[in-house]
Image (cartoon, rainbow, N blue to C red):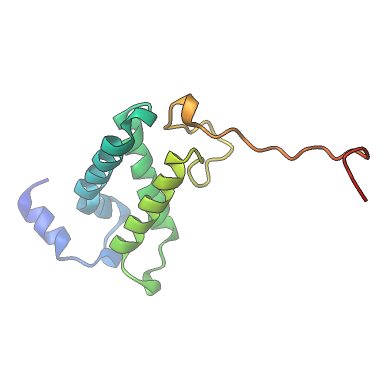
Length: 126
């Protein structure tokens, strides 16, 4: 992106920008965040590209949930990306993806789904 456009985006309030322009504004931060997580936990991820796409998905998720009246977008999206990426590294699925095959981790690092046990009369103690 040309420098004059980047400067214009930096001087514009986030609530006045579309999601496309917000993405252009914060794309360097998203790449930096992907590099940070890949450097720290790269052995767990399938690929850097999958990790970057996941972080972009979390950016869109944060934009959808963002309430302009409650604060600025930048600290909000950073918090969402950090919290959700820590959950993903721990083996949880990304938000709103539990019914879809959305895995960024290698299979050995995924958490096994937790199914409730059937209760029979023998297991219930009075």
